[in-house]
Image 1 (cartoon, rainbow, N blue to C red):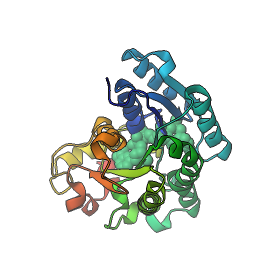
Image 2 (spheres, rainbow, N blue to C red):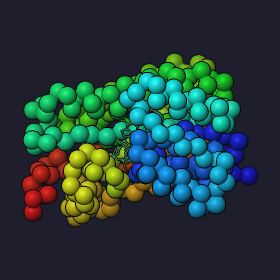
Image 3 (cartoon, protein in one colour):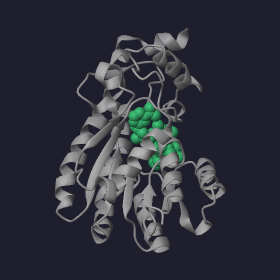
Image 4 (cartoon, rainbow, N blue to C red):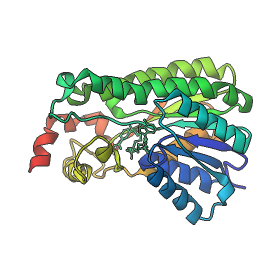
Length: 279
Ligand code: NDP
């Protein structure tokens, strides 16, 4: 018997990157999964990845949804319940950052970017959790949020709004974990460091930007002490661990940092990434 047999997982942001790897892993470990994102083509790619790994079609539900819209969140929950009858795991993974088309960073970046990043990285997690709560109480389920080391104690002057959204998400994880464990629902989170995904493109950076930065970081031990940038599976495995009550039941309201040691040194901050991209 596989470890998530009989379980149903909703993985937000599963049309790409960390969410895609997580949905695939859950499905391979026996769960039925709802995959979701705005991009229909990429969502179908995820579905095909899952089916090609030998998972039956009726174990995967695709829901196209923009999570900043309330009605799309309702659709995600309602279609999951209609199709699978219940759900046990919610992974709040969808998220992004926005770069300024005028090249402004940090506090100089327009406040509309602050609004946008808070909408998807924070507000959508709050409202989706509110909507999921009654269903997860019924199944004594699990929530895993995907935060970032950007939300930690160090300053992030160039990515201020993104970092603020993730710091607030960490507080949300801690506080909701206490409120919800009283009803048998666990809430935890993972804070990745740099992971090769589609996030650079989603942020509006030229294709290949992340690979370029990764190469630089991997060559500097003050950036990445372990010498390699993360892959989506590195994070998916932690999400699955935190969603697996047999393995992690005593962990409540914590965030597991997975960043190759970078947040212990934070040397990346000493380099101007925009200059590196120009080289
Ligand atoms: P990707 O850009 O590869 O994936 C992001 C996912 O979020 C996509 O599936 C995207 O779907 C979805 N998404 C974004 N906006 C919305 C929206 N409005 N409504 C619905 N879905 C949305 O990036 P990652 O896999 O890297 O990002 C996953 C999470 O990991 C994010 O929360 C990110 O902040 C976090 N993270 C990533 C790090 C990294 O280095 N990659 C480091 C630390 C944290 P679609 O475009 O189809 O809508």
